[in-house]
Length: 178
Image 1 (tube, helix red, strand yellow):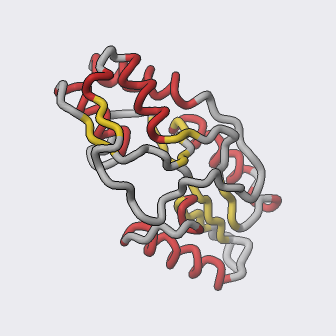
Image 2 (cartoon, rainbow, N blue to C red):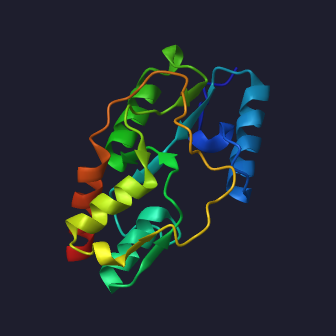
């Protein structure tokens, strides 16, 4: 047998009912890894990551960033969807720990934290921190079907992450000032 190890990255939403091209590809990857039944393979499922560089424009934080930076209205759904937000530094640190403890790590690892946020609560806090609450238009977009609006119970251990909202605000302030 080879000493080769394969680490794949997925999404915590692989087990949700959200259906899009991205998640279908992650589910296909996870199914492939599972079919291998091989300890050399690990699949880590991540929540939303933030914290370095300009946020991706089509993601929620990226859209908020653009709204604040350009001083334009931010239309969103009811914002009742639950998410976990993890800073990239702690995600990397936890992944390194998993790699260092490869033999004792599970084949599938959900990189869960303790803190769940509703998207509207994060948006309100961020726009408030930038004194731009007038830009926030909660409920202007229709809700997306099959979103995670009931607090999920997650399997596996919980990892430690900093409190998301203050960290996200700090990250956005730093990014906007650069």
